[in-house]
Figure (tube, rainbow, N blue to C red):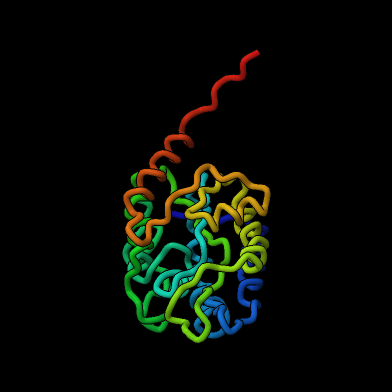
Length: 227
């Protein structure tokens, strides 16, 4: 049986979700957590963060921004509807308890989510806390069915949410997926354990190799100081 985090952490989690929901949309930014559909995505994110916190994570996997086939649909970074319904590897992290029907959005699979959750259980002993440098869906103006790289001001805005996400589970070692995530962590004064190649656009093999190397570094005790 999962052990729920303490009441104080749950209050912080709920305040975090409310802050996400309150962000107004813009012509080139959609808020997956706002409105009626956003409540379903906030439910998914709350379920995920509660479950992952109970599994003693040591790593935060930080991406760029929600994709229109992935987190912008589900509310959980690096997931798709299929991953939420069936994924999670040996951890039993996903499945029952999540909203995964077409009311969230049409896409059922997403390449990045599939690759990430295929390799995470092979590399890490516990699932990571996943988040994004900019937690809202950045898309080309007038084209919500697409993705664009967040601007520097958007990454700066996202830093406050990134800090809140990292603080939900103290002691996490961040791993950046892509340069935008690395820059966002640098804005917080945080040095990532590793900066991985994003798995999209043929980067799956390099992502997997970088993740395995980061996991090995995480498991290697520091060398004793010379005196």
